[in-house]
Image 1: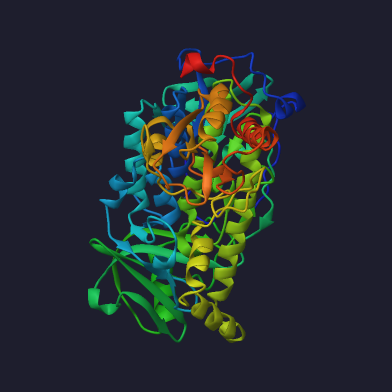
Image 2: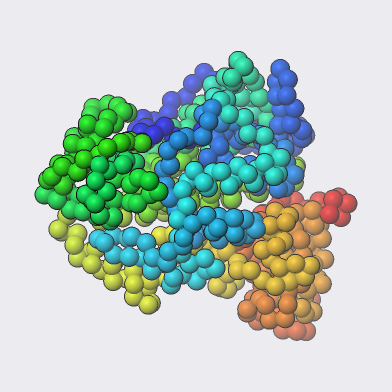
Length: 548
């Protein structure tokens, strides 16, 4: 369920009569109530209901299914949209997909480019990033969704189209969702609900979650069109006396982007071909005839971030959680990022293994990430304006984007490759909170373990501390797989606890303890691992060995 092909809504959601969430549900997860099978009937049941079959919803569903959690996806649209919003996956998305063994499917779909448009015509040097995929992949969002849908089908995820959410209420045991379906009204009961239904999220509105921020002040027209004369407009930016037209080549047509000089009072008013043609001609100061329009839309520069990403048993991800200026075409990438951070946590909770602290961490991490996303895209949007006073700032950033000392860190910030989540026991190691690279280990390498199990991984360097730390983690063996690394595979570290999304939750530096450390320092190390395991994966389980 994606946002309609118009500008994002600028109104705040209002609480409705269907929002009967209780304070108890918001504060406590009652693990005594278990919905562990997907059923249909007068009241259909599933452990987790995902609303929206865009990149966020599909990724969340795949994460849950990988963990063996029953999940169902409801999508408002009866068929996939005929238009395509974006054409890229950035390095952050590719890194996350790599940790699920899926990246090769996506890389086979299009070209990779090691730089991208930044500000003032400058290029951002992606090759300078310290990651496995330092580039952007050219791939239509429609194809991204097709590949994720195919992965969901492999994992047995039902995706029900033409199902529109009309009401929800939550209590201490779960969430009841009212829908309209192709064969009439329907009711769903689930333990958790993930709202991944776009910038105009129905789930967000019905849950009564505020969506503060700034409304759109400037509007842009976008058209997928066929030009009467293909040579009329070269690819790239063409400036004229009235503005500029950005031309992106596509198979059989071009995408034109230009400012909307006089947006209508009703920002949702459909864009007509005469209006779009007039805007292009005005910008160029000459006619550039359009023979056919495949898709025309308008979008604004609104920036909004949901007040909270968790409300009891209801969670938000992707555009339902945040909207932002389109600078950098990062929307689909932020959606996948949210979904990867949410999916494994919901899977633990649905298996009665996690407490509220694990679920609350999703809001803490991704709300902060959403704020950074809005800051970065707003900054790029402001710098992209034709304002001579900003020229020195654009020039400075253009220099930083390619200078050897700053190009990598700047690109990692803009693409979110440099995402570092807070850790409870900082070690000063370069991997603290960051995505861990692939590490050779037994029984399998890190990425292979993450892809096959969707669990956390405890990487242990060979040595005297390996077995004590392995024993400490034994009570979480239903959630965390221990793996002994190849010699010297962990630079400056003795052990690393890796979350299911590939980020390091805890690092034991190699120089933290001498080989013959006394018992108290060793116990302190074990205790740090124990508290981190509890915080990230929930309380220890007495039945862990039985479930392994």
